[in-house]
Picture (cartoon, rainbow, N blue to C red):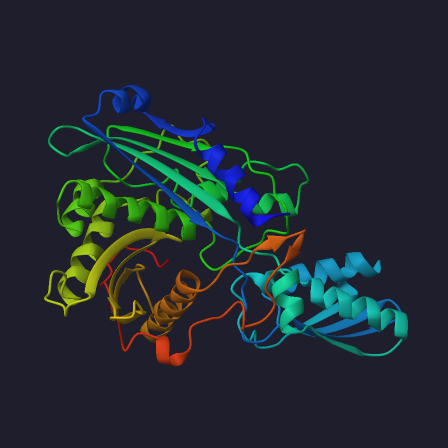
Length: 414
């Protein structure tokens, strides 16, 4: 596996037709008749979770019984896998879940607990297995690599009349089924087929991509490349038409409405019933307006500073963020301030929501600024925080604000 060569493969696939997973209108004709076509191609590399505590587990296997202590995100899955691996009944397996020390999806897979169980069975004694940081980074279930290509056609008035989005990425399904080359419905439903813009001609495609390593869940999963690509394209369109980015974003979101996606087969919708959790563009508009008001969109900023805005529906919540970035005379990038508005419906613990949003800022900044897992000769090239760093406290935003939108009386929790 060679990352550089594989990136080129994905880029070539994104420039050719792929499996159509959403189709409204006639994109091909609309692009051909457009006054101008803007093309954006966005690459997201593999990411490793790099949780504070690397995988660790204690196992005590005695005969046909096993007890596990581990920071797993799926106790039931761990119990099932341990029983299957050892060939014992599930009811004979006890799983004690410890504090995660950070999970982010990595610890939904319990390979480290299975390792401890097999060793304990072999040795006939309790065994603790502690992975090193290098073990973790080089042998995890990585966030998928991805190329997102978007072509947007504009008429002579600068209105977007066509939108074609091709998403090319190895699927998590490949971890469970050999030969899976298309993304699963749950991945397609994270910002691709559920894209909420009010455009007459929309087509989403999913070209083939074979996995070259283990792919797993990673915080917000396929929303990472989709939100990055779609919202970056909004900025490109605003720039191309000499318009304010927030104005461009709201125009694309369009009128307050419930999105109808009749052309989408097997819409996942985060596992929630669509009648209770529809895609409501009024709520997306609301968080854009809220963060723009509270975050001071359009405010004066010092020389070398700039503001960006983005909005996305993720896990049936609606989020909008303004980021202030700054470059000094030496080209060093810093982020002085981040403002985020979220509408997650009826909520109980606002401090927990705030912590999630603040944590997302830190993790997102880490991977935007530093994080890239690369392969050469089939091996991961990184191993620890010296070559796969996360941002340190002195790089974190000085100001991080979170605004929770009030929920309507009948709005279910996300």
